[in-house]
Length: 125
Image 1: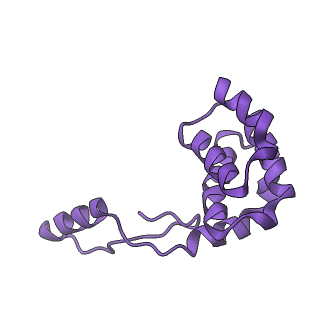
Image 2: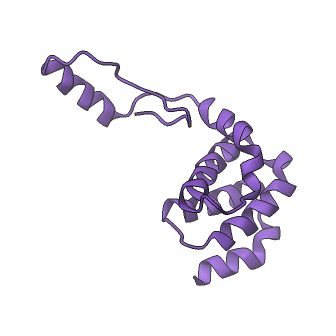
Protein backbone atom coordinates (compact mmCIF):
# COMPACT_ATOMS: atom_id res chain seq x y z
CA UNK A 1 0.00 0.00 0.00
CA UNK A 2 2.89 2.33 0.68
CA UNK A 3 4.17 1.90 -2.88
CA UNK A 4 0.73 2.65 -4.30
CA UNK A 5 0.37 5.76 -2.15
CA UNK A 6 3.82 7.01 -3.14
CA UNK A 7 3.19 6.28 -6.84
CA UNK A 8 -0.02 8.30 -6.74
CA UNK A 9 1.76 11.20 -5.04
CA UNK A 10 4.56 11.23 -7.61
CA UNK A 11 2.70 10.22 -10.77
CA UNK A 12 3.25 13.61 -12.39
CA UNK A 13 7.01 13.06 -12.11
CA UNK A 14 6.77 9.82 -14.12
CA UNK A 15 7.40 9.62 -17.84
CA UNK A 16 4.95 7.64 -19.97
CA UNK A 17 6.95 4.41 -19.77
CA UNK A 18 7.16 4.64 -15.96
CA UNK A 19 3.40 5.19 -15.75
CA UNK A 20 2.62 2.28 -18.08
CA UNK A 21 5.01 -0.05 -16.26
CA UNK A 22 3.70 0.92 -12.84
CA UNK A 23 -0.01 0.58 -13.57
CA UNK A 24 0.64 -2.66 -15.52
CA UNK A 25 2.51 -4.06 -12.49
CA UNK A 26 -0.43 -3.26 -10.22
CA UNK A 27 -2.74 -5.08 -12.64
CA UNK A 28 -0.40 -8.08 -12.82
CA UNK A 29 -0.39 -8.51 -9.04
CA UNK A 30 -4.18 -8.18 -8.93
CA UNK A 31 -4.26 -4.90 -7.03
CA UNK A 32 -7.63 -4.61 -5.38
CA UNK A 33 -8.27 -0.85 -5.47
CA UNK A 34 -10.09 0.57 -8.44
CA UNK A 35 -9.34 4.07 -7.15
CA UNK A 36 -5.67 3.61 -8.01
CA UNK A 37 -6.51 2.53 -11.55
CA UNK A 38 -8.93 5.42 -12.04
CA UNK A 39 -6.31 7.91 -10.83
CA UNK A 40 -3.67 6.46 -13.13
CA UNK A 41 -6.18 6.20 -15.97
CA UNK A 42 -7.08 9.89 -15.69
CA UNK A 43 -3.43 10.95 -15.91
CA UNK A 44 -2.81 8.53 -18.77
CA UNK A 45 -5.80 9.83 -20.70
CA UNK A 46 -4.54 13.41 -20.37
CA UNK A 47 -1.08 12.40 -21.60
CA UNK A 48 -2.02 9.60 -24.02
CA UNK A 49 -0.18 11.21 -26.94
CA UNK A 50 3.11 10.68 -25.06
CA UNK A 51 2.68 6.90 -24.86
CA UNK A 52 4.44 4.59 -27.30
CA UNK A 53 2.85 1.58 -28.97
CA UNK A 54 4.55 -0.65 -26.40
CA UNK A 55 3.21 1.48 -23.53
CA UNK A 56 -0.28 1.33 -25.03
CA UNK A 57 0.06 -2.42 -25.38
CA UNK A 58 0.64 -2.66 -21.63
CA UNK A 59 -2.29 -0.34 -21.02
CA UNK A 60 -4.53 -2.69 -23.01
CA UNK A 61 -3.85 -5.39 -20.42
CA UNK A 62 -4.58 -2.90 -17.62
CA UNK A 63 -7.86 -1.84 -19.24
CA UNK A 64 -8.93 -5.49 -19.57
CA UNK A 65 -8.06 -6.15 -15.94
CA UNK A 66 -10.15 -3.20 -14.76
CA UNK A 67 -13.07 -4.13 -17.04
CA UNK A 68 -13.13 -7.70 -15.71
CA UNK A 69 -12.46 -6.87 -12.05
CA UNK A 70 -14.83 -3.89 -11.80
CA UNK A 71 -17.31 -4.06 -14.71
CA UNK A 72 -19.45 -1.21 -13.33
CA UNK A 73 -16.60 1.24 -12.73
CA UNK A 74 -16.06 3.93 -15.32
CA UNK A 75 -12.40 3.64 -16.22
CA UNK A 76 -10.96 6.56 -18.25
CA UNK A 77 -9.06 4.25 -20.61
CA UNK A 78 -12.24 2.41 -21.58
CA UNK A 79 -12.83 5.20 -24.11
CA UNK A 80 -9.56 4.20 -25.81
CA UNK A 81 -10.18 0.45 -25.82
CA UNK A 82 -9.83 -0.01 -29.57
CA UNK A 83 -6.60 1.97 -29.93
CA UNK A 84 -5.06 0.12 -26.98
CA UNK A 85 -6.17 -3.24 -28.40
CA UNK A 86 -4.71 -2.27 -31.77
CA UNK A 87 -1.35 -1.48 -30.13
CA UNK A 88 -1.44 -4.82 -28.33
CA UNK A 89 -2.29 -6.85 -31.41
CA UNK A 90 0.37 -5.14 -33.53
CA UNK A 91 3.16 -6.61 -31.46
CA UNK A 92 5.25 -9.20 -33.19
CA UNK A 93 4.47 -12.41 -31.43
CA UNK A 94 4.94 -16.08 -31.78
CA UNK A 95 3.49 -18.95 -29.80
CA UNK A 96 5.32 -19.53 -26.53
CA UNK A 97 7.54 -22.54 -25.93
CA UNK A 98 4.79 -23.99 -23.75
CA UNK A 99 2.23 -23.55 -26.55
CA UNK A 100 4.60 -25.29 -28.94
CA UNK A 101 5.16 -28.16 -26.51
CA UNK A 102 1.42 -28.63 -25.93
CA UNK A 103 0.80 -28.48 -29.67
CA UNK A 104 3.46 -31.14 -30.32
CA UNK A 105 1.95 -33.41 -27.66
CA UNK A 106 -1.54 -32.99 -29.13
CA UNK A 107 -0.16 -33.88 -32.56
CA UNK A 108 1.40 -37.03 -31.09
CA UNK A 109 -2.01 -37.92 -29.67
CA UNK A 110 -3.50 -37.52 -33.14
CA UNK A 111 -5.42 -34.34 -32.46
CA UNK A 112 -5.36 -32.07 -35.47
CA UNK A 113 -5.57 -28.47 -34.34
CA UNK A 114 -4.39 -24.91 -34.83
CA UNK A 115 -1.21 -24.21 -32.87
CA UNK A 116 -2.20 -20.67 -31.99
CA UNK A 117 -5.54 -18.99 -31.53
CA UNK A 118 -5.91 -15.23 -31.03
CA UNK A 119 -8.81 -14.03 -28.94
CA UNK A 120 -10.75 -10.88 -29.81
CA UNK A 121 -8.77 -9.12 -27.09
CA UNK A 122 -5.53 -10.13 -28.80
CA UNK A 123 -4.37 -12.85 -26.43
CA UNK A 124 -2.55 -15.85 -27.86
CA UNK A 125 -3.84 -19.24 -26.75
